[in-house]
Image (tube, rainbow, N blue to C red; front, side, top):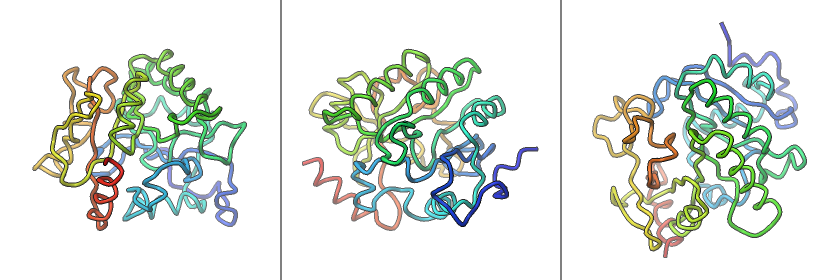
Length: 269
């Protein structure tokens, strides 16, 4: 049996100096995702351009998520190398979640900047997932909007992955409604963070439909999970369906909901 929390192979004394790797929970107990495989990467994979991270508003900076984030960064959790991860994928649940914390691995040519996607890793991961008949739920906050080599490389990496595995959705995590319009025009699947009082359905200035996360809107709470109940018209978890035809909105929540909601309203003015 695989023990994915055994820290024996890592050195807590050097923490973030550990080689980049991936933590895997084979069957998560998370009440939102449901009993599926989830992964987590080090915080160094998160881009500094993320406005929620800049404002301390990222969901991964609070509660139990923060505990897991800190433990991973200081070397308390086992990390699988990329090669080990690809071998382990055959043992994943059919639906699984990429990076419940962290982001896609960094380009090995720029391992410390957190801005640029490791194209080879992403393409190989989605191609293998599709070949195994898996349905991964993937988000990335790596930047794609400004004009620079890093932004252009990220767009090329995502497009290459979409071509390699057209049945797999790669969601661009957007900070604002304007970003939703821009990313959608580029042909990407999108998600966006919404204020806690946003409606269940809205339309951007560019005409992009946004529907609130069904799990968050559900009144059945813990009994409603991404993997088991949140289905698109194609029978897939909505965030894993590349053909769902709309943006998924996630509502701010937690003990700083009011603060985060105010920020989002300012950004969307």
